[in-house]
Length: 523
Image (cartoon, rainbow, N blue to C red; front, side, top):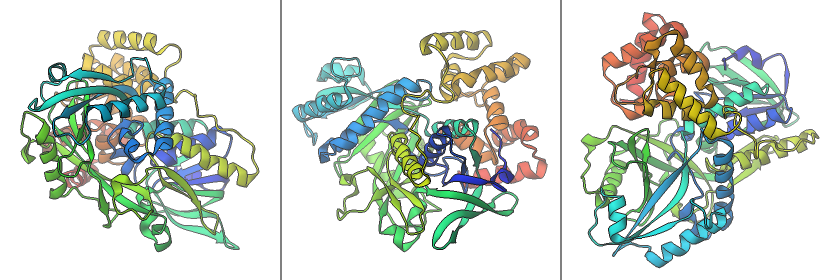
């Protein structure tokens, strides 16, 4: 997967997709598989904004049952199961615990009814995925780090988890292999119109400064939060900010769904790469969409709510990292964002440009199929969506369990520790064979990059070689989330930058610039 800005020019595309998050990636991949000539451009890095700032979950949205949004929940649960089946390396089951206390907003019988409906909508009745009920003692034994005072009972149920940035990247790679031209760090500066209709766009290379014109019969904006930058677009949607904190390991292999004491909204505690991910907030956002910050009030809220449930008491000093993202929500007259539907819609402006509004990580594939259906109808092309039930680009062939067993055996033989091997196959799928080839040539490549994190040197090298990395922050935030999972020192930054400098063509001045930029962006 190589970046080629010049490939955008001197040809006619059927579709230009603007925005390289999960909706753009699915749209480009789907359209390319249908035989359309596709280009997708992203002003920064793939999944740079909300698509790498999620809760890392593939889920139906249990809390949406409270607002009777059964259609959205069923849709998302349907997609969840398909992704579990078609991309077991990318999406894996995650069991959630739900404690019921004496003062819980939702009591035992109401929660039981909700979980039964959730399983019914998912088709999980009488399966291992279905919910289970525990008395107080059994639940406290399963989740010993929770405060058991006033605990009355508890439930567990199953949803799923992913690495959101890796999900987007795999789809982009699939689009490239299907013939699409995919260019990150390429900013759309203006649509080009004739007789009031858009037939392409001017784009600027954010690396060289070069400007060019992309010709396309149809244009789709999947730009997320940047949809709200014009008055007309702001009438369609609004923004809600979600904040997450990374804290030390606590949970083991299971997550928690909890209810905030201060406002009654749901938040999660999730194991992620061995640490604890706490989130999310949900507050109206009216600030600069280019600079979304984690504020002290966000941190105080999440720490206070988490500390209400956990036996330990976390402080700001325990926070390893934090991040904020913006959700795009369809406009309605309800001022409370927690009760507003997260469903999606497509808008088409007078100049023929299509805008993707709202949506969820889980259901982005289905929504993107409707985008491409609309594009095909406009172009007079009869081509059905191929992505439902189709294996992901990096999904191994054959039986997954057999492949996984063989991959783990090979990793063990090469000296890769068990935890790193687990995450290697989840991060790369069948491309893990390329990791193994690197280690066969140089055994030191099996060593961890940072001793406390399950990432090895060969992983770093493969990402730098093959995953369209431009900046050090691309590599350490979205290709491998080291910046989220540890506090790097100067020596760590220097050592990592030096290890990929030859691959990325960086000289000493560039290395210094990349380290400085990386530290400023994630200090």
